[in-house]
Image (cartoon, rainbow, N blue to C red; front, side, top):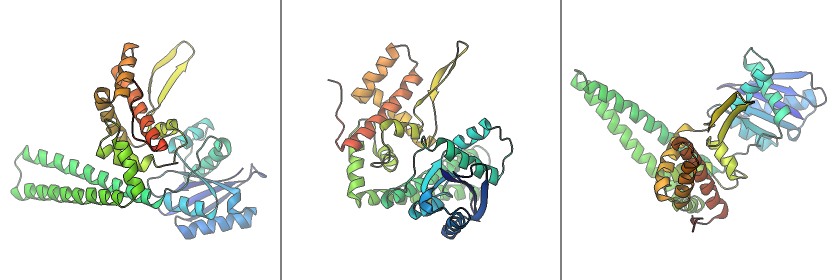
Length: 328
């Protein structure tokens, strides 16, 4: 397996190539984090190692949005691309006894991750344009909501003490501006979904599930896009709602917990949806009370309810049918 590990920063791609024929000899290259930089990297692999793009597995670390341009350019060039969870690379480095950390060491660890775990890591491919745009709109909405909450907290503190009238008015104007921007973004999201029949149809399927409202259905729409995951379990793992156990012999037996990988904002909304589902969704309600009768704690049962809710969402999208309770 010929693997290039890429440590991504805002401006640079630090790359390490490990070849199948020469596993103990690495080749390093630093290029700009843009399309031209990717072309230089592929030219370097071709000249130095006689490897075409189709011979390469690329492993990048997910770094906000800075990895996206390189990942798309490499994918369209014919490379197999993996966008790895940063925790996976850190855990491998610890296992290998690597204590130092710099850009080139990180690139080497990512390349080694690709060599050792490529069969267990899911290949990445860019989302369709309509899903990518929806994700960007949702990210903008989340940023505005965060800013609004911060400004609201500031205004509350200003009212708690003597404050100049101009400062109070400034904070209130900022809140009004953020509210206006949120209205515009919500309208843009709705317009975008309505102009793409597939998105509109799939959102309707998600909203047919009791406890899945407009906000959560729109958030899940970009994540659970058709054919992105091979199973509901993969989707649940991506969202961080699968159980993690920690047991060893007879001395260590900790209570299972959620993995909590992925987006915490979506997971928080899933939690509230699960609470509602225990009252209004027949399948989740029965499942939840069954777990309580078995001695599970309420939090543990709610975590299982979140996971089951994702399984139901995956099923309605996969089968392209509205929700129908499974219990009699």
